[in-house]
Length: 217
Image (cartoon, rainbow, N blue to C red):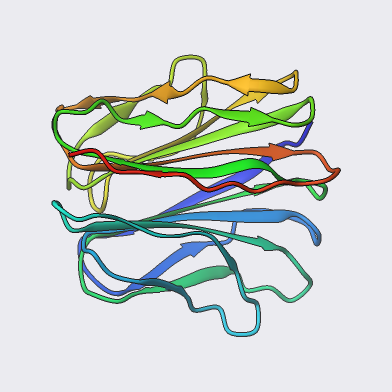
């Protein structure tokens, strides 16, 4: 089963230059970066020749003016100590980076969902194709101060309650291949626009990738 090695978080109340310190890692480990900004815009890689793949393209919450994206890179010798991205417009932003071990690849997902004030933040269900995976979920809120909790039974990677776009990233071990249920988050205060990501990380083998986007009023 793949392992979470380390994680870091970066945030600001305004700006277009998004950055987060590189988590501890070794050559061949995989870096994942979740970015959310407080406007409907683009989020692009700004790491020069050490390019990140955009695993989930910009996912917007039109009513609120918020955007999230997910990036991935297999780390190499000489990679930077800070990961950089650029928002197309000034606003609050938060970035979470975490590393998984050398053999980690996507198994199912990433799935992206969006929701409105009256909807419970929910990370999509998925189906893993191999045993011993990690189910990673992220809930990103278009709000400057909030405590996001859950999902029940999941281990926290990083969370932010103020000073940027509030979010929570967590994971759970999935020992057997098959269906993984949708997972809900508990916001406090309730009633914000949100984006969730849901994906499985496998410890090697053939990878399949699927993207689902769901919009809720």
